[in-house]
Image 1 (cartoon, rainbow, N blue to C red):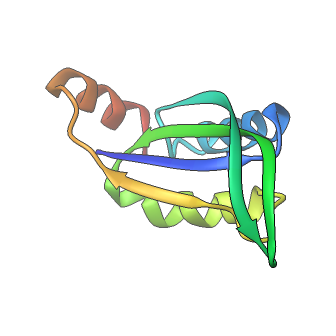
Image 2: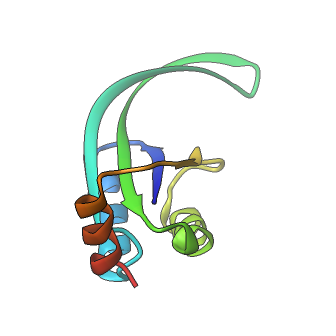
Amino acid sequence: MIICYTTCKDKDEAKRIANHLLGMKLIACANMFEIESLYHWKGELRDEAEVFLLMKSREDNWPAIEREITKAHSYELPAIVRLDAKGSTAFEKWVTSETR
Protein backbone atom coordinates (compact mmCIF):
# COMPACT_ATOMS: atom_id res chain seq x y z
CA MET A 1 0.00 0.00 0.00
CA ILE A 2 1.11 3.57 -0.59
CA ILE A 3 0.16 6.95 0.80
CA CYS A 4 0.37 9.79 -1.71
CA TYR A 5 0.10 13.46 -1.00
CA THR A 6 0.05 16.76 -2.75
CA THR A 7 -0.67 20.30 -1.63
CA CYS A 8 -3.30 22.32 -3.47
CA LYS A 9 -4.12 26.01 -3.73
CA ASP A 10 -7.59 25.54 -2.24
CA LYS A 11 -10.29 23.04 -1.30
CA ASP A 12 -11.92 23.17 -4.74
CA GLU A 13 -8.71 22.10 -6.44
CA ALA A 14 -8.10 19.34 -3.87
CA LYS A 15 -11.64 18.00 -4.36
CA ARG A 16 -11.34 18.16 -8.13
CA ILE A 17 -8.09 16.18 -8.11
CA ALA A 18 -9.40 13.66 -5.56
CA ASN A 19 -12.62 13.11 -7.50
CA HIS A 20 -10.66 12.69 -10.74
CA LEU A 21 -8.42 10.02 -9.19
CA LEU A 22 -11.36 8.31 -7.46
CA GLY A 23 -13.27 8.24 -10.73
CA MET A 24 -10.32 6.55 -12.43
CA LYS A 25 -10.09 4.03 -9.52
CA LEU A 26 -6.48 5.10 -8.94
CA ILE A 27 -7.05 5.83 -5.24
CA ALA A 28 -9.37 4.28 -2.67
CA CYS A 29 -9.89 7.40 -0.59
CA ALA A 30 -8.66 10.92 0.05
CA ASN A 31 -8.48 13.20 3.07
CA MET A 32 -8.15 16.98 2.93
CA PHE A 33 -6.67 19.25 5.58
CA GLU A 34 -6.32 23.03 5.55
CA ILE A 35 -2.68 23.90 6.28
CA GLU A 36 -0.24 26.80 6.28
CA SER A 37 2.88 26.23 4.19
CA LEU A 38 6.20 28.04 4.41
CA TYR A 39 8.64 27.49 1.55
CA HIS A 40 11.18 29.06 -0.79
CA TRP A 41 9.98 29.68 -4.33
CA LYS A 42 11.92 31.57 -6.98
CA GLY A 43 14.06 33.40 -4.44
CA GLU A 44 11.19 34.38 -2.14
CA LEU A 45 10.12 33.00 1.21
CA ARG A 46 6.41 32.21 0.84
CA ASP A 47 3.75 31.84 3.54
CA GLU A 48 0.58 30.43 1.98
CA ALA A 49 -2.69 28.80 2.96
CA GLU A 50 -3.03 25.47 1.15
CA VAL A 51 -4.98 22.24 1.32
CA PHE A 52 -3.09 19.02 2.01
CA LEU A 53 -4.53 16.11 0.01
CA LEU A 54 -3.68 12.67 1.43
CA MET A 55 -4.57 9.61 -0.68
CA LYS A 56 -4.35 5.83 -0.22
CA SER A 57 -3.66 3.45 -3.09
CA ARG A 58 -1.68 0.50 -4.40
CA GLU A 59 1.98 0.73 -5.37
CA ASP A 60 1.32 -0.23 -9.00
CA ASN A 61 -0.96 2.82 -9.42
CA TRP A 62 1.83 5.29 -8.57
CA PRO A 63 2.94 6.17 -12.14
CA ALA A 64 -0.65 6.95 -13.18
CA ILE A 65 -1.37 8.90 -9.98
CA GLU A 66 1.73 11.04 -10.51
CA ARG A 67 0.84 11.62 -14.18
CA GLU A 68 -2.81 12.53 -13.47
CA ILE A 69 -2.00 14.90 -10.59
CA THR A 70 0.60 16.64 -12.75
CA LYS A 71 -1.95 17.12 -15.56
CA ALA A 72 -4.74 18.32 -13.25
CA HIS A 73 -2.74 20.54 -10.87
CA SER A 74 -2.58 24.33 -11.17
CA TYR A 75 0.93 24.65 -9.71
CA GLU A 76 3.96 24.96 -11.97
CA LEU A 77 5.77 22.44 -9.72
CA PRO A 78 3.32 20.57 -7.48
CA ALA A 79 4.64 18.55 -4.56
CA ILE A 80 3.65 14.98 -5.42
CA VAL A 81 5.00 12.54 -2.86
CA ARG A 82 4.66 8.79 -2.37
CA LEU A 83 5.24 7.04 0.94
CA ASP A 84 5.30 3.28 1.30
CA ALA A 85 2.90 2.22 4.04
CA LYS A 86 1.67 -0.86 5.83
CA GLY A 87 -1.95 -0.91 6.93
CA SER A 88 -4.09 -3.45 8.68
CA THR A 89 -4.86 -6.51 6.56
CA ALA A 90 -8.52 -5.56 6.32
CA PHE A 91 -7.77 -1.96 5.31
CA GLU A 92 -5.24 -3.01 2.68
CA LYS A 93 -7.78 -5.46 1.22
CA TRP A 94 -10.30 -2.63 1.01
CA VAL A 95 -7.77 -0.33 -0.73
CA THR A 96 -7.03 -3.10 -3.23
CA SER A 97 -10.73 -3.77 -3.86
CA GLU A 98 -11.47 -0.08 -4.49
CA THR A 99 -8.64 0.52 -6.96
CA ARG A 100 -7.88 -0.91 -10.37
